[in-house]
Figure 1 (cartoon, rainbow, N blue to C red):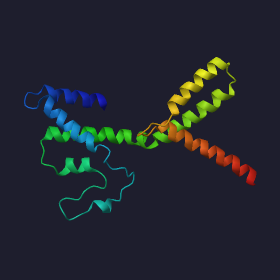
Figure 2: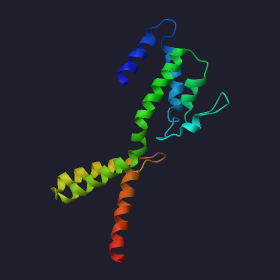
Figure 3: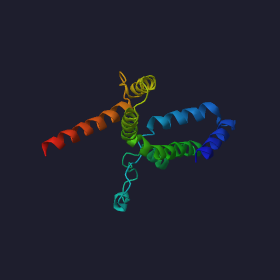
Figure 4: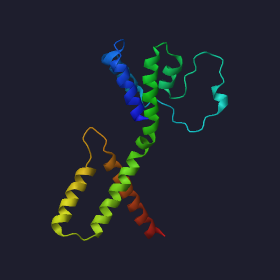
Length: 163
């Protein structure tokens, strides 16, 4: 998919009637909306039956543009490509915090139990802390996920004593 998209973008850029600047404008606009795509796995067919001409697909602005805009075909194709790529990556984006947190949590626990020599352990702990450090003004998925699993572990420890 990505190779096909890249080849098509190159063709549009080489086309003298389109060119690099026009392609870049469309890509930039589509990327600004790329996370506004449908995320519903199951959709009722009754939802699609509608009398009015413009029914905004739930959460899917790129699909709305593809279906109802009056833009040139190459622009619609670029928007379709950006949408297709966004749909590919959204599950990874939605699970990133838990995935990275789980990996960081177990990485820390396993290496801690290996009883490494002090020099190696200090190198590991420095790198681990760099990875899971909170970011001022930003979101570090490694930090958030790691803290979630750390809290879950503490909660499970407390529950053991409450039984």
